[in-house]
Amino acid sequence: MARVLLLLSLFSLLVSVAISGLTRIEHSLKNDGSLALLVIGDWGRKGNYNQSLVAEQMGKVGKELNIDFVISTGDNFYENGLTGVDDPAFEQSFSDIYTAESLQKPWYTVLGNHDYRGNVIAQLNPALQKIDSRFICMRSFIVNAEIVEFFFVDTTPFVMKYWTNPEDSHYDWRGVKPRKSYISNLTQDLNSALQESSARWKIVVGHHSIRSVSIHGDTAELLQYLLPVLQKNGVDFYVNGHDHCLEHISSADSPLQYFTSGGGSKAWRGAYMPNSDKLRFFYDGQGFMSLKLTKSDADIAFYDVSGQQLHKWSMAKINQGVLSQAM
Ligand SMILES: *[C@@H]1O[C@H](CO)[C@@H](O)[C@H](O)[C@H]1NC(C)=O
Ligand SMILES: *[C@@H]1O[C@H](CO)[C@@H](O)[C@H](O)[C@H]1NC(C)=O
Image 1 (cartoon, rainbow, N blue to C red):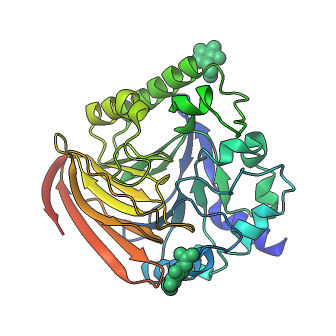
Image 2: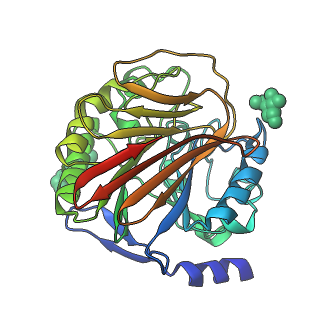
């Protein structure tokens, strides 16, 4: 309880609803005007499949970078989300695993398709913050930190096969049905929020990949409905999970960069299916990503299960133009 109260006072979240209809959270920068964070996806397996090892390394890198928050790209609880707000998996897969001091920060979290196989209303319930105040999970929302705006997008409802061919799984579509108007409302809200944004960096986060060379590959519905909105509005990065690996792909026809961070636990799928965009980095194993931002620079890095840095990429921006990109 003491920890919860301390954290609540540290975060003192400012939450409001933007004109676009998406909830907006204000997050302050460090005193030097920078921001640092980690991205992890596809993790909640009660420490198994090296989830605990990845968590330990996140703690170390998080301390080095003095991170401000963590982004989770979804599939937070395997195999079937949470059963309710009292599901012990919440603590077994989250609170008891990410125990490092540096990770005691807000975790801005979207839902993955496995989360939709459980009780979604429970996973979205702020009552979970009474158990662990770090866990901030919403369907689609904005985190604004002056120089950067993060647009979190609920991508599972886009994917047709979960609706038409759920196989043995049950998807919790409460509050989502009908799919068509959900998607059209969401893409419109996102489009207006992006248009309104004056942030230097615009970063969109979702569970499903737009582009991926691993087993799930590209997500056709996101190429169709989401990608045009991102390209039209000059989004810098799209960050996702879903494929249990680490990837960096550069769009061939726009400045957009795709980053997959889905290596939170079970990995090693052994698939490789190239697409027509430029693959800069692919690691078919466990790990996570870091992002450091200032007004003019973005630094991205990927780490494996032993904390070794596997790939590094930087980008500089002056006004709205891209100045340079360096490996
Ligand atoms: C966990 O990581 C170790 C390397 O530290 C590796 O040898 C092992 O195969 C990994 N286990 C799984 C389940 O991926
Ligand atoms: C889409 O937006 C309209 C108008 O605000 C609303 O009536 C409808 O319920 C929304 N549909 C979904 C699925 O959220």
